[in-house]
Amino acid sequence: MTGDSVAQVASQTLQNLNVVYEPVKLPILSPLIGTHKQDIIRTAEEIGTYKTSIVPYTDCCSVLVGKHPATRAELKVVKKIERRLKIDALVKKALKKAEIEKI
Image (cartoon, rainbow, N blue to C red; front, side, top):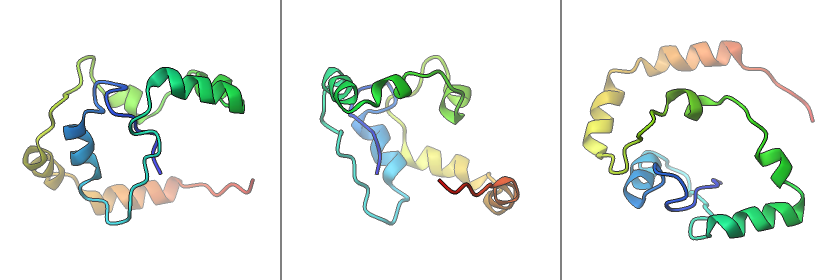
């Protein structure tokens, strides 16, 4: 389940979303995909989630995304770059730092 909405941000072009979704084997549900940003905000206000959604936080997107993100990613270029990543080592490192929280 994603909160993607086409063209809400520069990186959410159809071409970029296709590249991001390509390796995923499970169905991807994007209920907001064609929803206008103002409608999303209005709904968030109605259901009481808007204030939480605008709290500043640091995530991987805000740290890694440049000032001018690509709007037309090329799958073959992304795959070439991904081949250089040491995925197994990255997964092991992430799992060592993982925490389980009961809510």
